[in-house]
Length: 75
Image (cartoon, rainbow, N blue to C red):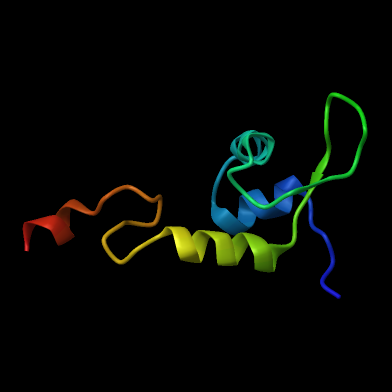
């Protein structure tokens, strides 16, 4: 069974700010598992779920951050 990782670890894995990862988790834009029952949630992640999510959401016509790649469009 794959262990859960922290927001900081996912942020480093994706090259994003931890604050962005927390916001994405809260909005349901990234696979996340809440581990506290309070209004201020603590999130845990499985790297395989995060990696799969981003692999499916990025097409060859996009750069790493998900924006359209202008170089690809000009060809």
